[in-house]
Length: 447
Length: 89
Image (spheres, rainbow over the protein chains, first blue to last red):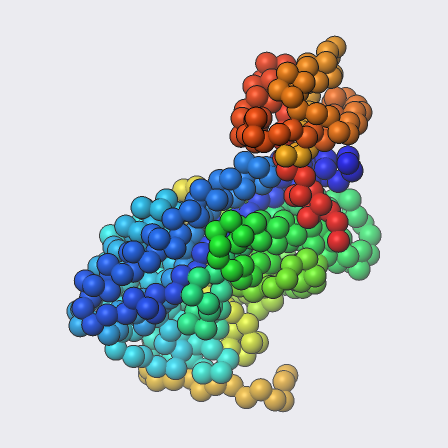
């Protein structure tokens, strides 16, 4: 019995907020496709509720027996635009309602996959799905939606970029909180366990268990022990800590997989903050030596953090996947909220940060009078960063109707609260209105 | 069933006795034990073994949590594999 390691583990869980953020079961719905929409939805409901009927129970058992908090249980399904395309339904809101009912029946927190992949172009189902998003999110509370509008191999679908700017505005007009369930990706990954962007890729197995870990507090505490030392030591310390945090993910995933009889997919090596004190990625950056997140040097510190987390985590688990990196969702990180309120962190710096970490402009409230074209411009910028740098990027912004800079939007729970941030007032109208397709970039002459 | 029991709280007379007594009453054997004072906190760890046919893990957890509440202690019980998974290569 090794007392020190037992106590250290208990301290990581109790005082430093180490937890399993999510166990997400990916479920393929390709075998539910039917030309009759009602039949397809019944098959979808049946498949989800039978495949994942024990997910919540097993997660509870693991939590009880091993003392590891498992915060969320989630489902990710095949992008509904693919599944529903065979039907003649005029809109896909009913599919979202089916997802909601299935999620409710098995007790999971969220279900992702009300999604479309349009990086190269639209198929018939994609257009209907995207048009259905505002209503689908208004009529459900657990359904998450994502649209992939660009990739390194395909370039950027500027028509979709323009459309999603309008869709985000329409979604916010019904209720701005619904926007937190909608993410616009470039280079979306097929095995992401995190929401709102999780969907089950077509290349995946029929069912799979993916795990997302948390643990910024553990990294912060570990770095407190190496104050003033060389940056190399910081990197080593993060690697060692990330290893332990990730082992927890590997451990929980393999037990869940065994008990559910579903293959274990990947661990997503992510540092996911929550609004709780001591569970902040921004605090890690400040522990590295920044007066505030947003100060010059923030991008470098974040790059080091992100890379060291991956280096430490990769050895800790069999398969790595998902988004894997440090998340910087503004509303979900208490220290980021403080930095924004103090005027020390702006959207431009956040955009730079997204070039070196996962995932993008995330959970950012913007003024309600922001034009659809401006939102599209933000999406295009993020997608360009992802496309050129071969990484996943995303936009999840919340234009809050009637609110301006200085106001706040409350999401509740893990999603926190977001101060409305100023954005550049000059308009990209004519650029977005051009439509068409930004060609895939060249992968040589890297500069 | 083998599990690690950790007992943490303000030091006072009779903690070891109370915990050991409770375990023996439920036929839970103590395989290994260590105890120290850390940051003025009484800290004890036990490796316990018992027959799950007689006492389920959940029931053992409830017993120990109640004992903890009655004695102003935090008592946790966790299966051992989690510590090995996190701390060992």
